[in-house]
Figure 1 (spheres, rainbow, N blue to C red):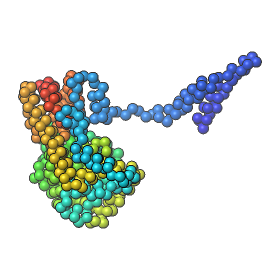
Figure 2 (spheres, one colour):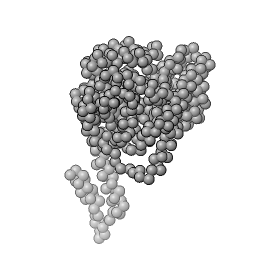
Figure 3 (spheres, helix red, strand yellow):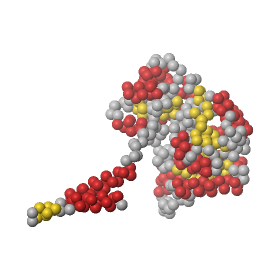
Length: 443
């Protein structure tokens, strides 16, 4: 009504007025411009109270890096693998799978079901839990395809909130996106001790004490391997103690597995904690991402699954996952899931994937060693052993926020403010420059 009134008023103001015997007629283009201006002014009432959101701490970092014209600039902020030339890397097995798919004459682009590609889901469960997993053999594991790990986390958060969970416990620190995902799903985010910054090590005793004090039935998120951002994982003996403690507290363990195969170069080894919990009788949940290990960053491939007490219980939970998915994004994309399925359904290609994953993991580990060596060569007297003790894509360097900002401003090296360095961005060509910069800001 207000817009109609404005248009009426504008029409009156722009109507031709007599000037002697002739009327002054406004040109149509001028009238259209004035009308559009008035319409834009009215539309702005809908959006004027929307403030500019802060930049994402990681995506914004990449934007700053791109705008920097310094020749030796380095981006070690983003969690995406790069080869030793600093270029994106596509696994040969992925290229082969794409070629196979493109040569299938009956390949279509129809919608997948709400739960995604059943073949992909079944292969994902075997990949994570192991083909000899007791709950899997008893049909007590059910799952769905998701929009990578992020989508699976959100679906899980909404589902457990719907059924009475009010909070979730995350390790401190954890992946930066965990907190907003679960808050947006309606959960209160609480933390438990995980990392001892002073000694650059796992705070296992503090972790156990905090778990023992969690209310019975609480949900606890665990990084299956290659903890992000610290790269510091419990030993198998420590995982066993955690399993016993969590079971005694009757907690719901929720594993986030984003690096299976990429962390150590051995996919079964990277799933050891999850498989231990499953065999120990936990009714757990798992989210998987294929972004890092398969390099399918832009395909958004993932899975969400749970272990139930019976096949019927597992299927009931799966049906609730689907109820969350349908109004959220309806169904997942097919291409990335087909790539993963093509690889994991072929014994030879699966072995190729494992070997290629190991190649990525080995390069990361070589750069860890090289970085510490170069720091020592630069004259640093600090202890950097934690960098080589950590595992996975990231090194939790121990740099303070002030040191990170100084390194960015003076040396044009970009990492997150918590000092997390993506080792994938470290190459044989820049490791000495990075080490020199780190030494400069810490001496």
